[in-house]
Image 1 (cartoon, each protein chain N blue to C red):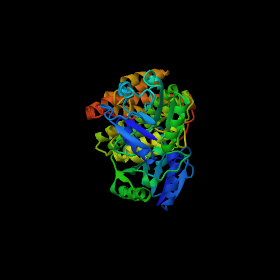
Image 2: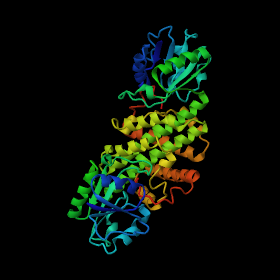
Image 3: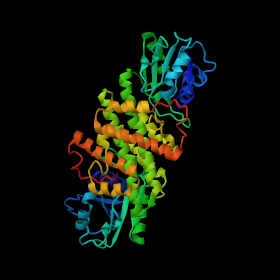
Image 4: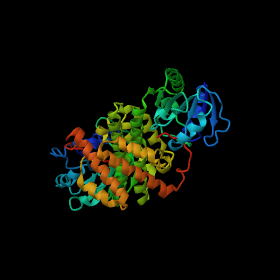
Amino acid sequence: MKTVIIGRGRLATNLLPALQKAGHEVSSINSRTLENLPHEADVFIIAVKDSALQEVIGKATKGREEQLFVHTAGSMPMDIFKGYTNRYGVFYPMQTFSKERRVDFREIPLFIEAEDSDSDTILHQLAESISERVYELSSEQRKYLHLAAVFACNFANHCYAMSAEVLSQVHLPFDIMLPLIDETARKVHELHPLDAQTGPAVRYDENVIQMQQSLLQDADMQAVYKLLSQHIHQFANENHDQLRLTEDTGHRV
Amino acid sequence: MKTVIIGRGRLATNLLPALQKAGHEVSSINSRTLENLPHEADVFIIAVKDSALQEVIGKATKGREEQLFVHTAGSMPMDIFKGYTNRYGVFYPMQTFSKERRVDFREIPLFIEAEDSDSDTILHQLAESISERVYELSSEQRKYLHLAAVFACNFANHCYAMSAEVLSQVHLPFDIMLPLIDETARKVHELHPLDAQTGPAVRYDENVIQMQQSLLQDADMQAVYKLLSQHIHQFANENHDQLRLTEDTGHRV
């Protein structure tokens, strides 16, 4: 297919080689100038940050009202295209992209949505040519999906960042955490996160919780520690009653 | 070496086969009864939960004041043995253990501390026979290490649990998050967590942040979302100034 990617950010940087590898003809266009934006393509993919999306749609669709446009944003409804173009949809690859790392697109869940059945067919073909995990999802559900991704990715990564911050206080390198981080991620392939939880908060070890809180000199870090510890304890009680609290465990983290 | 593990929780369950595999003679003793606790061994390893540690030390060391005892707790000082036994130390494997999963001990960072140099030699030998990552660490530093582990493991896992909770609201299965969770963990092998961060909070996309907050009907989940989003933004500003905020990115999470 003839595809055009508008935007040169992290997603665009990763999507371009994935589409090329699948045999598609791909043009990459700077979203700021839209210079040389073709008049026709099978699919125009707008891959820009959410706050720029509306403006780019306005400019890019001009004179291309019968072209198929998609955006790639988890939290933006498909209807953002309404009034600008007659054929549109969403093409949302759920992953955290970096310019420094290439990710294997075949493993990335791709969530698509289309305004009409012809567009739906095209998007299915395009998505399935690069990923083995293609799902149809409404704009409403996708909002929740993206929110869930913020928890699983951005917030989890922030926990790594806070961990690095604590380690730096005693001059320990962050990479000693990697085996623990890896195992924490691997565990939830087999256990529900609620069943995978360990540590002072879930067993409500008040002595350790109090002591650890006092180690945090930064008031914001302390607030995060307190809130998350309480919330872990609450989740455990709501969902598992006394399962873990009565266990005689020697777990260390 | 002749080793005795006191406790039958998650750590003990994983440590026992690791020691056996390395050729040690291992006895496993129930910490509640201490029935058949041998009078002599090269090392007695007390692997019980923190809140039970003091009591188990009191009972287990009686009549064994010249035996080498260690505990396995990140947040407990070595001196907890003082007055009970004359030879003691700490043997802290930093990992999240489950009874359902066996972990490869060779990859687990093992932090040791000993009261005297003879005990230090024995603990080094024992630790290096099962792990390739053995470090000496003081009780004071270990407290911070354990706190950092709570962030990287328990809190990250709780983010997975909250993600699962959000997904359940729209009846999506948790396993669609696994590729994202894996990549988030893999990324910090190459990038510092601050450089790996993506998503609405770090780019301070207020529209998405407000919208996502409103999707959370539970007040506690909303509080967590708000606090973590603010904190991500704050970390980004403190540490990186405008690096990411001015970038024209198409990242999705």
